[in-house]
Image (tube, rainbow, N blue to C red; front, side):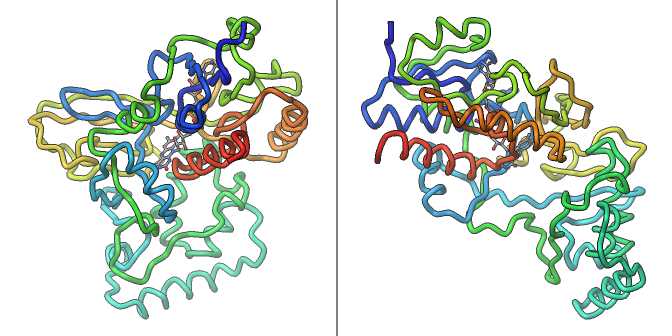
Length: 368
Ligand code: FAD
């Protein structure tokens, strides 16, 4: 018997925004998630008052006032500005590449001095049509920045040599000739006070939600509960991997509670060197200017993905894109299933983009 207008598979940001909009429009929704909690990858775990970003550090940023106002309905945001630092061969550098980084690398104090070095190195390198990530980076920024802050980090992240990685992974490199360590260029940025769960709870207020429910364990029965299904899980899984599985890069997080106030003085510290197996250490309390007596740090280890592991970053090579297109064709033929979110679209989305996408799909579906 159909008891709901929509069965929403996945309580990540996409599913929650869709459920919220549908409920506002007078529709009934049941939201299910196979994890023991709602929120998908933005879920935070409270460790003695510190909000730990369980599935990787999440910093909200957008240029879109509408999206900013939308999230601010559910939580107030603090004025956190992401200013990561990177450690390479024992020395510390500011990111993104800016006048501070160039001073740390070469002692240059003016934009002209820094620009002259970068342009000279790009010319010396002489790459015209970059064929791989290494050539691309060298043609954009020169050898010093590449070797000190890009090469080993990227190789760890993708588990491949920079010369084997496609050039398109780096389209642009953010280079600033100002002393500005703000990682993002967006107008709005911050962390929700009280963590991302506050936004998720606000979105799901008054909506029936069930956790620890895997859609595929009971697909027929669950689908019968609603007129339509909003599916935010993996698209290849939905079609039982009939064209083969889409590949991802995975991550492993190692959390440690330390009985001291401040471990590294910054929320995000990258580790560039190849002999260190993690890419960064996150100290979560600094996202919220925490004053607790303890701290929680997370080491982030990139890992090869298998079906049992969490799927984090799509591997956007030709083979996977071809497979995805085949799945997409099938999905376009479905009348009562709406596909959305990063896993169903096999695409990396930032949070503001996923919210915009869910709002757009909800608007279309609800004829608003
Ligand atoms: P998800 O959050 O993955 O939600 C999908 C949900 O579906 C999951 O909860 C899953 O359990 C559930 N599900 C899947 N299959 C089933 C099934 N069969 N049955 C039931 N439930 C199912 N964005 C930013 O803007 N800023 C950042 O700093 C940032 N940092 C990031 C860091 C990392 C390491 C990663 C990987 C992403 C980051 N993002 C960031 C992106 C952000 O996480 C995504 O935009 C957002 O979480 C996507 O939401 P979603 O609903 O599409 O997917």
